[in-house]
Length: 633
Image 1 (spheres, one colour):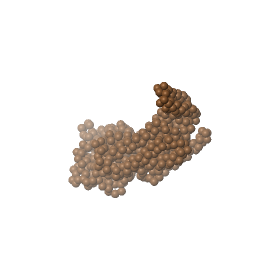
Image 2 (cartoon, one colour):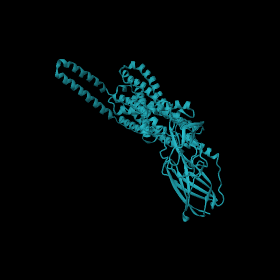
Image 3 (cartoon, helix red, strand yellow):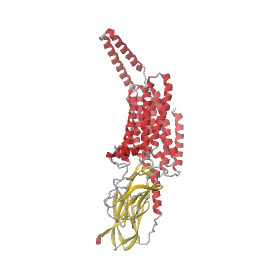
Image 4 (cartoon, helix red, strand yellow):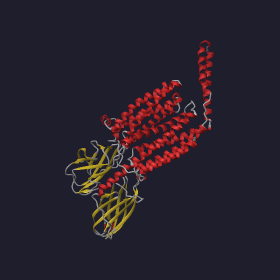
């Protein structure tokens, strides 16, 4: 059997790799998760006159609330007036008070993208001349704090509950129908239902605060809850709760009437439960697909059904694996080797569906091979692929144990019911024989318990079964980590969107910029930096042309260690002539394109050995200052 399957597996793997290569070399538009692609005024710019409004352009449509766009003066006072409004397309704006004084202003935004994820950020611009500001933008991250942690935990538990509920029920119905009468199996599936229901209610309560203020006190705000119910994400959560009510009916039949039917009567009921269960499970999976990455962007009509199949494949595989683990460790009733083999076949089909749908999702969310390493989504996806490969490897070991597994269902199992009938008969006759027969009934029950324990020891002593238990336990451990990575992945901006947003920013900036070539007498300074945060290492290069007293052209280039342009939010330069106690002279260059800033007519008042200090900020909270001396004049 193994020899027959192996060529098919190799052929399938080659076809999937070919499809993966074809898909990832195909271009397409952005897929999901809004990103800021432009602004007016632009980030870091110095304008002569205060603007009437501030406008932001995103990569896709977003949902606004009254506090989605704020503009703060150097003292932290809000200077916007009225509610944010749609300017046109994917551009949104907010009006400013008239007569704003000179200084540095901070623009903060928190919106909800079309795929239901909150997106937040901040930047500064100056009127007249830059100034110090008391505004801290370190907290401008979407979905953070206690509420963000609770929401992430709720998402993890909802996925886990769905997997256990759907996969456990499918395992009982399709692989081990005797399991419908096994208490640990019943508790597993019911526990999955309770977990998914509780997590869905938690997400519904947290949603308003998660996409808004992030305050714990707003969790029980009924007005916020009412607003959530009018959104796509709220409708998806409510739909999930209604489907869970139908799932409760399915569970009650599976572990109630179904278990009490004879084998012949079970056939029709099995077909009905399979159809009804598939519909309910697909509906539950659709409650994720209709509100997240799959629901917007490129080929949404195809992406949502693919996402449903992907989730069902994951649940059938990992949920069935959990059910098998419970059957091997917690069940007194031995599971037949035939049931394990049936699950092995079902798991193989699930893995094939998982890989096929995963290839399509990867292409849709990444769009290029470089996005695997240059975006956080791609890096997390690589981790997920590695975990899936590890899981498949351990599953192959389990498959080998399954092939060698000896059926340990012994005839002694049939003695237990007989002994119970003997005990019952002895108990019944006890009405006429008195205390002696009661003692006999008690001994019969004890003997039945001893027989059951002996059977369990005999079954557990089977080395093949012991090996299967260990390999299945290892699979479950990897699956727990895989589910955590998947949960983080669903909340991360897709790599295709991130790269397209960077390209759009560069195109928007370069339309009004010009590059200056280095002339004779120019000075170039290279400085390595490390802000200490994630992806915080790179090299900053500062050019002064003609590097003399008076007006100079200054260009600043920021690159990653591999030489690629580094897209960071802010760069500042300060000049100090320590020998003459001049400076620091602050310079805020204008952003030209990705990794390129420029400032014209930089006035250097005196020749000498000037200290050039460059402050590089790679995120809202991660920044560092590096310096080098340059001879000017």
